Every structure is written in C-alpha cells, then in structure tokens.
Length: 358
Image (tube, rainbow, N blue to C red; front, side, top):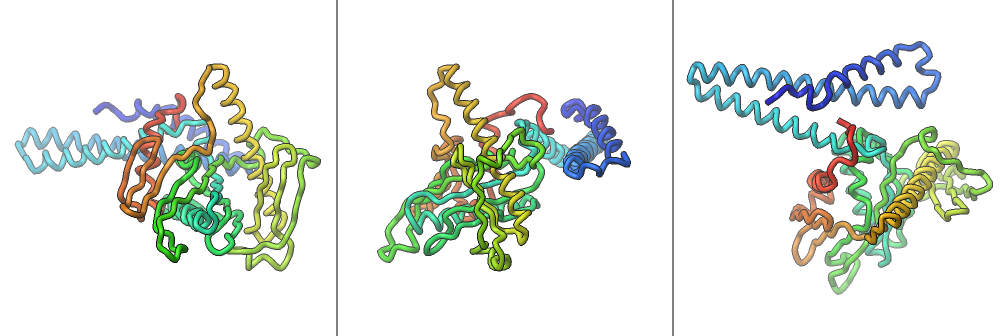
C-alpha cells in the first residue's frame, strides 16, 4: 500500500490546520461569534482527519514492518497478525474514502429535518411519529446534538408534523439521502379488524447554515408572524406565555414554526433560520428545473417521489427503491440503524464534485 498522505492531500490539510490555528489565536477572533464557531468546527474537522490519517499511516507502517520481519523469521502467526492489522487499516481508509463523497456544497452543514404525515389520518400520523423517532435515534447513535424545534400532535395519536435540528459533522450530507416519501405497510394497531394498512409520510432535509450563511433576504412586509402559547410534547414547560412563533412567507406560502424554547426571541430566530433554509431549497429546485428543461431532461425532480418502503406484515423488509437495497432488519432500522441505507445511496450517487470533504 502506498503512503496514505497523497490519497487525502495530507500536506494541504496540515497547512489548512495551521491557518485555522492562527485564526483562533488572533485576539479579535471572538469579535464575530458566529464566524468563530464556524472556524472552530472546521478546525476540529480538519484536526480529526489529520489525526485519523496519522493513526492509519502509523498502523500501516507497523504492519508492514511486522510482515517483513515475520517473513524473514518464517513466523506464520506473526504473518497472520500483520495481515489482520492491514485489514483494519484498509477498513479505516475505506471509511475515510467514503466520507470524501460528502463533497456537496453544504454536505458538512448541520441539518433541519421536517417530517409530515400524509393522507390517512391517525395511521399516517403514527407513522410520521415513528419516522421522527428514527431520525432522533440515528442522530443520537452518531453522537450528534438532536433538538426538537416544532411539533404538531396528531388528533388521536402520532404527529401531523415536526421539525428537528441535528447538529453534527456532515449531518446534512448524510441525511439528504432521506428526502422523499416513506411508505409503511403493517397491521394497523388502530384497526379493530386487524387489517393491513399502507401509510405515507414525507421527509424533507435542509442544510442548517445559520443566518449569516444564507444569501437570502426576507422582507418584513412579506411575513405574517403569529405568536401563541406552546403546546404538546416539550411545550408544557413553556406554555405559560406566548413564546411559540409561526412565520408565514406570503409570496411563497411557506410556513415554519418553533415552540420548543422558553424564549420567544430564540424561537423567532430559529423559525427565521428554518424559513431561510426552505427559501434556499426552493431556489435550488427552481435552478435544477431550469437546468433540466434546458437539457431536455424529462425525469421528475419532485421531492415527493417514494424512496423507501417499510413492510412489517405479512413479512419484514425495508426496500430502498433507488438503490434496490433490501434489509429484513426493520426494527433495527426504525431504531435509527440507517448506516447501510445511507451508505448505499451515497455510493450510488458517487462524489458530487471534486474537492470532497475528506
């Protein structure tokens, strides 16, 4: 195996870390708190990559030395040990290579996940709540910060809709694989005759870039601001005052809300961030549609296309309709074990562009 440094442009990464270290040492560094947080996150990401490369290169060097010595000594046990160590290095490098595919414009950003129940009443609302929990569990498994921003409870059970903020390295890059309609087939616990039902819920994932990173202007005259008392899960602690905020962008009809903070000011800031993310997404879709029309591309670009089916009866299977990946581990997936599904989607897509995240 060659040196790993060349594969991942090690020298450039080290130079970048030195530059970031110099910025954090500047006495004026904290004058712009938002910018400082962005630099600190990039610094931590770059340092982690360098540390991983150093560890893998060291393990590779040790394994090669052990292998050569074992061959000279005709020691089969040490040869097997060396090959085991090389396999571990290969696995580590594979994971780093995988991360290089997360090179989209905002793949390294945090994510805002919106889950909404489809038609079908309580059954679809229960399914939406199951998906919400799935993404919460996925975020927790990754060691990410997971914050519930907004929640509209269902009429009898489940939820009509919810918004999550998932803060962590490449959260958006991973979770953009979840955009679309998710289909559930099961024996409904709400059907007295125990019939099989099919339910739908939609998932939208947006990059959470912060107020200063969106090149989006929102005029006050374009907004309707509704303030009300928070309610539902999480809201019971803050519903004594009108702390919840809902924003309606009149030109587009986009509605966002946040009710999970005690402070109306914080809820307003979060709702505005969510609105800018949705307006950014709307602009991206318009540009993509124009590009496809110019290229004569007739394929649908709708976000609402069904991407995945979760069948619980009469058999257990999750099928991703884009990658054709199938898994019988339905319960594990619904508990947040999305790694194989996300990886297969990103591998199918390939690297979005050169200069990937790794």
